[in-house]
Amino acid sequence: MLHNLACLEPTPANLFFPPKRGDYTYFESQVPQPGSPVEVQAAWAADAAMLAYARYGSTRMNQEEFEGILRDAGLVDVHPIGHCFVDNAATARGFFAGNDAHAVLAFRGTEKDNAHDIAADADFLLVDGPAGRIHLGFRSYFESVRTKVAQLVSDYRSDHPNQSLFITGHSLGGALATLAFVTLSDPASSLYTFGCPRVGDRRFCAEVEALAASRACYRTVDNEDVVTHVPFPVPGLAYDHPEVTLLLLDPVGALKQNPLHPPRDRADLAELALGFVRGTSLDRLCTPLPRPLADHSVVRYCHYMAGAIGSAN
Image (cartoon, rainbow, N blue to C red):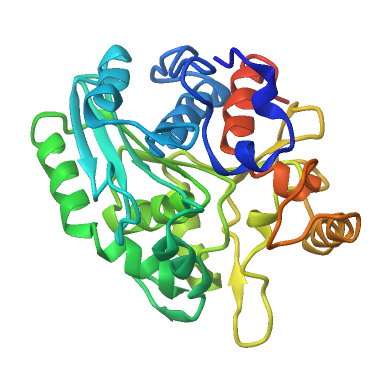
């Protein structure tokens, strides 16, 4: 639950960091149960995706307080993934946490002060992946933790063969979550991404779609979020999004499932360009941010998903 609406303002701080200490309480929405509405499950997964950043604003959490948040939410078996509590880590980061009812595998998105993250995002050559061709930077990051992730899931499955596994992430974390979903191919898993860029080509997307035929798979987009439009598909870089259930948060935060008029690349990128003309530049982000940038804020995803519970259409 958000306690300070200033966290929704279109500022660079809100784009790059989760809320400061005291501005947000994690996992206050309903605990997902088998058969829970999608917005309940997605709101819970969004909180996990934001917690994966392990920060209060720009201040990094320590491991004790991070794990305390998860244990307070009933997730008693907690395992950080990658170098979660150090600066400028060169691997993917996130966490696995579970209990006797369900588990979550969450990946961290890009940190603006981590040069390795930025380099991984920019390394968008298409290379061979688990199915089809995928983004080289995303593949490299996922491979850095793949063995650890597979072992954590295997260990959990030894005592919990059928419990739900939520796989989630925001931004770069959403791309890593998508790769984990495909690579693990766990029959009791579901995928919830927030502000996820394109991860691979049409063959890769077809594999995601095949898995989604038998398990929950949701791609959430906040209005004009520019990151969901990249890498832009051009000749030689045939990126695509999988055709799974789209959860669109409209300009006032209302949730639409598979809207008739989904976001369009050209329109949202043009709006971003217009924002730069109005005074924002890439090297010095000003306030207010253009809407396509501001809409990528992870706290906006969490706040609007929680507010959508019971109102999706």
